[in-house]
Length: 285
Image (cartoon, rainbow, N blue to C red; front, side, top):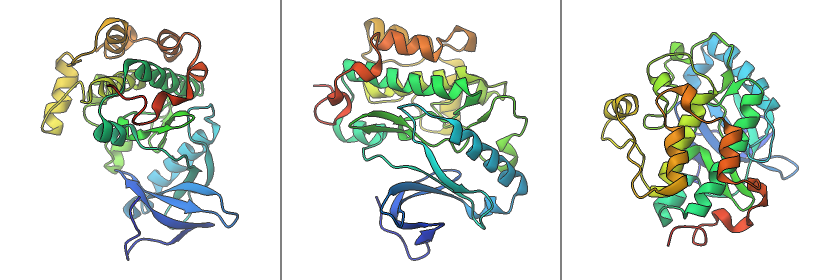
């Protein structure tokens, strides 16, 4: 967490902001605390989006959709104000590093930890897709590793699959290079299978310490996702087969989240040891 800078807000809605947790294409995320002492993550959209009425309407729909998402592996939406001068949303806060931070600091995860991580995230996607939503930005920095298991966060660009609005109209890049599905890159119809592709890329990163589509520029990354096979490093055996299946170019060839969860953890992710994601205990080596 970074200290607040002089030009950053100290209060948003009923929450006092304590520091900045991160930032992205749509806004910044702060650690906040309610008057009653509850700690939350407050996402505040970038001010220029507040001037776009189409964006506000979409943000309002997305907040309502995110409120419906439940399950043990997603952060719940607790509060929001889409009509504020600068729209914001507050979600439950869970202590733990992002997958990006954990791998950067301690190296790739052990195979067992990758399997449990994948099963938990697949269960989260099952809940999301069951509500006809698509997350659209599953990536290592949107995965928190907590003592109770993985959390999939940031539904800021999730939307109902039957929606017609395009976020590209406001200049927002949907997804992240290297983790976007080929159909997202090509502007084709996006279904839950796009999230499965992204999850496969996340698991490859967790297991090897690098993206399966490495590159020095966004253009290079996007080209590789569409036209080249993934680089799966030292992955082998059943785990390699599962990850490769997720990374199929054809959306219809990818497994469903439910079948993926079963393949990775037949007894269920919640039945696995609680030490599964603790840095220094579950990492490779």
